[in-house]
Length: 348
Image 1 (cartoon, rainbow, N blue to C red):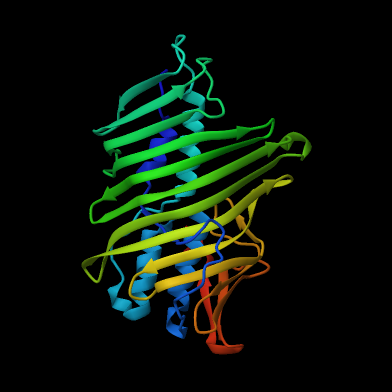
Image 2 (image 1 turned 60 degrees about the vertical axis):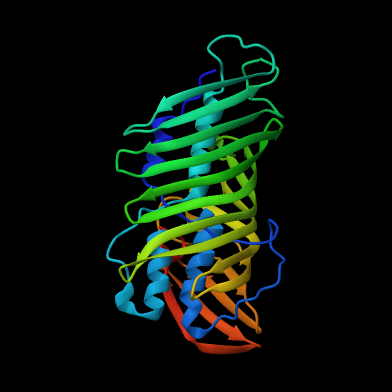
């Protein structure tokens, strides 16, 4: 069985550097320990939104938001590539499933492996347990991909392991458990590592765009996904760690497949200077955003901290490219509402 990843997967990695968050069980419910302040509204909003929706923040957005909240001149002059771990998972999984067909019959219960070179050095080693030797990726079978100094054309270096266990399947739905081990992407002064954690991913697809019945849903239960990121702040490399737990669902459906509706809740633990502790979050009104543009067409989220603090995040209706932040403590507003760009919050 020859398991190879298409150029689409490597192209995504080429754009990729992660920064992520969380801490408890997938779906939240843990108590908050961080007390938000008027000055920390934007850093909290950026971390929560980018982590919640992408499983990873955009390093440039997150670090710039944190830096400028303290001292505007501290913002990094370099730009980190945007990265959505959620999108990378989808691309690798699609490539993997499509490639899981042996070129010739295999012995029953044999582990088949393959090693392929990366575009600019290093390798990707894939293995797949075709337990019943039928040439298909079946329920109960597990595959693993190991990146070893895999270098993309733009100089990003990927190391670490991703395991995909195929748990269940119906005519329209599949469920996989993805486990990360020291999955690290670095480029220049930027690096990020998914140290550990797993995601139970249930994907449903039905209908057809031609008759406006197309429907797709992706539910992710993220469990203790811990990520370390390093990026420059005020010309000094700073390492931060985040842990994310959440239960998130994204839905696309006809007639408008250019939009995705997002619901969910969870918790994030962070150990940086501005957000040192945990917060919980809940999407109270489904967030409707563009699939490809920094646009949001409505939605609201609450982020709860300790000390009776609650941050209200609302996306403008109709879309204006902005969102409003309002901090409340013990039922009283703190400071004045802040307007931030959708591009910053959603990790574009």
